[in-house]
Length: 71
Image 1 (cartoon, rainbow, N blue to C red):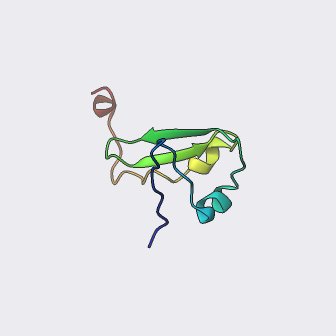
Image 2 (image 1 turned 90 degrees about the horizontal axis):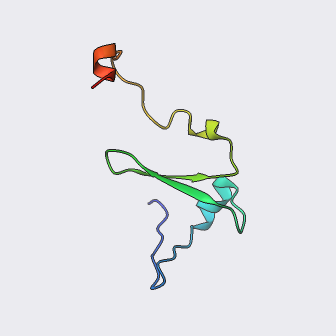
């Protein structure tokens, strides 16, 4: 079962220890939140290299045409 966090009455969330350790988070670190079109939340520590996001979006099955990109 994945780690669970609970929002307290002050709207604060404690990040579970296994997530803090995996991301090597430290107190006072800034985080950014991204939500994709499917509603998936991504948490990104601002002090980390953006390249850690590589592979988070699965590749498309077929190439996208220029017309599709302009839609």
